[in-house]
Length: 89
Length: 455
Image 1 (cartoon, each protein chain N blue to C red):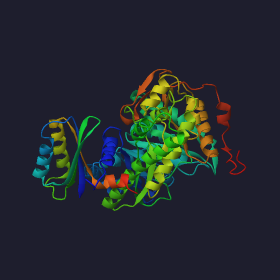
Image 2: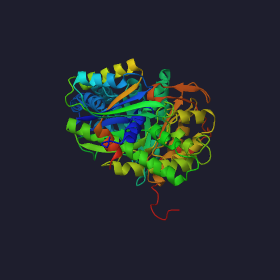
Image 3: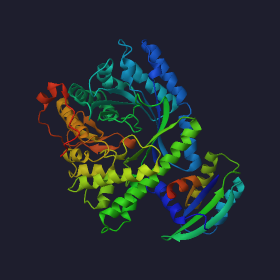
Image 4: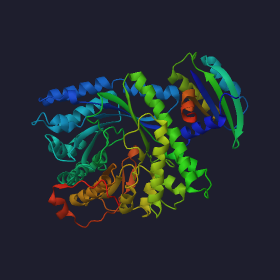
């Protein structure tokens, strides 16, 4: 159950810590992480395994949305299958 | 970070979050052939029971997949066997009772629309067809989520001109009976030539007699994603590159649709039917087919060059989508509804886009004159004439064409009608009011065209 978490917005202190803190709390294992500046915006991508997630998909989404609101950044969580479908033949 | 391409990931996220890419509809097709009963009350009960049983888990399943995978899925819908086929068995039934059964069943399972208050009369009327057509205005006034369609022509059958006359009257009457609700009834009624039997999009969805008992269709969308991709292409890039970029974008969009179809089919244990590769615009800024044509290099949609750009777009969407999906069906192409597309609304408001230009565009788009608001005093015969013109284009070119016009009762050209939501709003467009009634009143069947010696 691999998924990508993307975090896009104005760079601030503690972005990685707060997102990875939420992952840790919810039992989500971070497998890989990258970050870059994209058109002046901070962009972080995490490859995670949500198989061990200890809350429902709906709860997970609302927690992510809440964190995005607090940090004033856009955070998405999308299953790996979506990217595989769109970008591989 | 060799495991994934950050550019691909961010492109996908941008398509979902900034460019309105979504799966527009997951539509469950349900056959009602086993609900036919000479007792109308029993037939309606069977209809209600079959829909609420088959589609019981449709909405929660689709919503759960959307949440789990992070794919926006906008509508959940149901299409059913043309109700005229059920009506044939019960000559004394009030057809509207069937519409009410569809409405109640659809609401019980929480879908957005139920399509299939339909008659297929391209070659003539069978038992039930005329009664269904005559009941359409009442049915659409007395229900909320039922959609109606009538197929009045086909390339191999010609055009049923008696039905063309009836449908002009039905469109007008439907608008009159919902005049207190922005004439919304007429927005739920579409008249087809060469109607596809597996279309997941409303208002024209119905479940054809050759389809299986139950199946899942998916309609993808994403004009905003195509427009954004074209906006990044240099304005002096050759048109071949425009076509190639549309194909590549359509491929990606369609693959999302196929993924959703596979997931829903597996979860519900219902076979996957078709993917409808359509660019279906919404009134959201940028999510517009007109804006795509303008990105190709037109000052405003409707100017000279519009038909050529639309032909390219319609063709490239199909070429890109075909390889991305297992089975293609439905309408598949670019929709050009006026009230549902901010760019079309703008073009119509400024007078650049006219009904005559729209008619030309329908020769190369996926459907037809769609969501066009016409003056409230337009006679039924003029609407019938428009239906006949549009059907002739579809019949001769072996493609689907359709008419969905809304006569704005009590209003004139230049005023606005606002439906809200995905149906949008739009200016009332002037239509040629000269009288074709002698032609329309002739009735009969306009012969099917030659399929060779084509020039």
